Each structure stands twice: as C-alpha cells, then as structure tokens.
Image 1 (cartoon, rainbow, N blue to C red):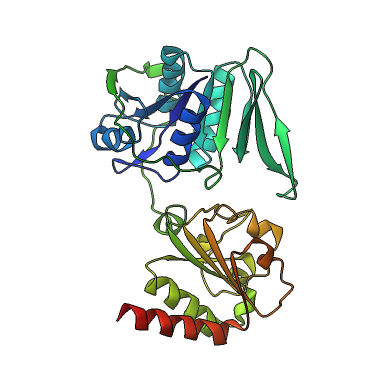
Image 2 (cartoon, rainbow, N blue to C red; image 1 turned 45 degrees about the horizontal axis):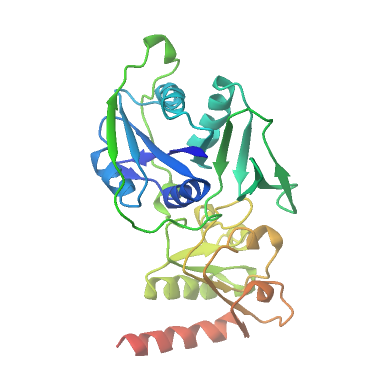
Length: 315
C-alpha cells in the first residue's frame, strides 16, 4: 500500500510523533514522507535517516491553505492510497479538509491499524475512551487519518532514504486566510510526547509539597513532569502537564506514576510506555495492573528514598 505521511515542521525541526508515522507507513508497504515549506533542508535530512523517501514541496508563505493545496498535489503525485498525519491541532484541522478535497472520509485519533485482506481496519477510542471502535473506508476510496501520539512503535535509524525537492506554486485564490502572528503557548514548552522519562503525580501525592518531590525526581532523572487531572485540579501543576484521554498521549521508555489510581482515562494516555513503575498506598489500585513494578506505600515516604538512592548512585 502506498502511504503518504505529512510531517509537520516548526523552526526547521520535525514535530514529535513523526517517527511513529514513518514506522507505520513503512510497515504497511511503500511510504513517502512529505515536508512543505522553503526551509526544510535540515528536517528532510533528519526524516530521511529513518529509511523513508522524502518529498519536499518548496513553496512560499506556508499557511494551512497552502499546506492543504500542497497535500492534494502530493497525494496525486505519489498515487497514495493512505494519507497519515499526527493528531495535532494542525493535523485535526487539515485532515477533514483534505478528505473533502479527495472525496473521501476522515478517521481521527487512530490508535491502531491492521490489515484485513485488501482492506485496512482503523481502531480509535470512543465514548471518552471507555471503548475502542473499528472503522474502515468504503472500497475504492482513499484513506485519510490522524494518528494519536504514543500509539505506534517509533521508527529506528536505517539506510537514508532519497530526498526529492519539488518547487510548486499555489494559486492565489487557494489562500483564504493568512497567518499574521503566532503566540507560543506554555503547552508547547512542555515536551511530554518526546520525553524518554516521565514522572507523573496524582491526587495520591496528598499536597503540593509532596508533588514537589515528583518534580525533584523528574529533574534528577533528566525527565519531564506529568500529572493526572486531579493533580491539576488541585493546582499543583499547570494543565500543560496533563496526561490521559483529555491530555497528552505519551510513550516514554520509563514512566513513574506517583499517587495515581489508574483510572482508564489516565491509563489510556500512558499505556504505551516501555516500562512502568507505580507507587500507591492502595494495594488494589488499578494502576498496578498496568505496572511492571508496583510499590505499595505513601508517596511522601517512598519518593525521598528513591531520590536519595538515585543521588547516591550518581555520586
């Protein structure tokens, strides 16, 4: 199957999640990554390191309208049957518009793709993440889908793919709106999706002082602080750190859950972690069902011991 992967770039760097898209595209068959803009050289080299051919569409004044027109062109040039993009705000805005241009439908927040004969089955959460539903496109229709971060295996470096640069001109009447100014939100400064280590705290931390130990442990391990919704509602950390169904989906190498009960809404956002350590005073906490190591105890007692031991080993 020919798959086109749209790689978002910012400050000439591919955004988090592109490795998952590449792996899935190559796993399904023949994949091509497309980058759009006139300053993509470094990003193209970075993406090509993972063995996928890269198509750079060189165009001025990149905004969603120009990207949309460029994607329509790329889909036609590559004769792609499937177009994948990350479930970022940009991806969620572009995917349904692209689907309309291609006379097909759009499936959002995909967490799984599998082959069923000649067809593809897409799995996505429904009803607030309490169930998973399978969907597929009508026969003969192109497929457009956004992929939720942390859902697939990340691609590993391989023999570099070819890079093709193509200059295109977008008709003036295709641009309906122009980007005048952007503001950096605090959520963009918290890189949970790209973190290899995450230490997350929940209501079980008890208070802001104990949550401070979560932050201290994360800093000691060179990781990022995460949180469940109750910890955010308590005001211990900003919403930019929220992990789960209504937050960010993560897949770090190490995830340490501190005082998190293990509600489905949270677990669905971190179950893709390679190794999970859970600390909770309730030995029957659901989080232990997902954990590789379970520690029964109070966070205010366990975390200082972990911090002390890690500091000693680093000394």
